[in-house]
Image (tube, rainbow, N blue to C red; front, side, top):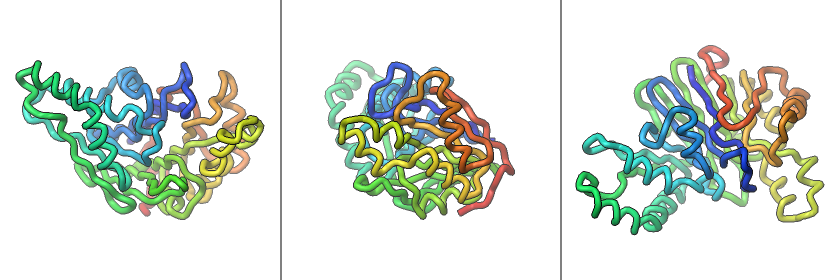
Length: 285
């Protein structure tokens, strides 16, 4: 079984009820954080986890709303891990990730220096290992296999999605993308697809071109549902809503998806949890 928790379902626009884009995946004894939008630490705590419990951090792309709390995750993991010689935080993302991590550590350089000076058991800066990919197997350990594939969020490039497999269960995390061949291949036969979605009908009514521009490179609810149907996935999980649904409006979003996808559709507030069982669909890309 793989447990999916929508830690943050919000957008770049600050929302008092939604953290920034982030998803927690528990597979066996391993815990993966996919993207780290604003407020992720509070949501991790609410989900019964924390930065020091992460097996790896997976980044779909380097838009600010998806990496806003990168520094907080790195520093908090460092100062709340008390075992000697802790394993480095594994950070997996597209090309450019290493530059962003290095810049983040530099930005927190004063803080890191203060803590090393104050705590005798902190003898060096946070340990991280960065791995950059555009496709292929990015993780294969202790029964969990993760595959990355390119997605299409241009002009943001490169961007990637992830497929996480464990003991017959599989979950695909699309990130921000329009329908594309890479995502189709990644999602083929998966148990669940976690997909970011926007409502073109609502966004296009906003009298600000900069806001309407987001329609260029995000999937609509119907497009996400069509990707899920085309790939034959078992469960479609909607997240990163633009604009954020008000209370009681999830049925509207679910109904739009259901015009295209006739299987299980999940959407909800932050901390919404979905269990993906083995055998829902299990074809590997």
